[in-house]
Image (tube, rainbow, N blue to C red; front, side):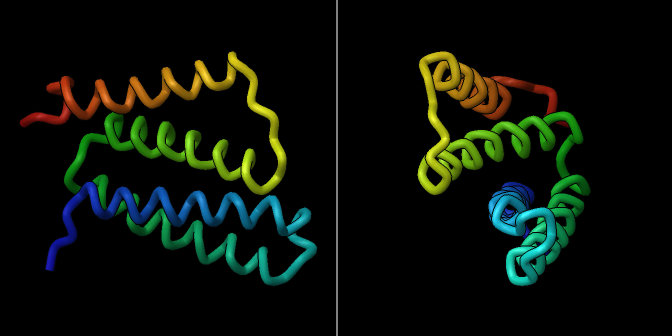
Length: 112
């Protein structure tokens, strides 16, 4: 069974976001459970990213991976860690989301 590349990418992004959130909680790898979640999460993320890269161009894949990841990590940091978001940060997040949408909806870079 072959997993669709966008599903593999979605799994990779979610695993990376979980791992990055746990990395913050690991307090410099001094707390074992968050450290374990971090290592497992990044392992899952890179495995599914590698599956995605077999069928999608690297530039498009990385743009989606990083853009969606940044938006999700920022949202989690705001919700869980009290990170403040000002107008400039919200505008930047909006531009990142717009860029990911443009790549997916209008770019021919992944065609062929």
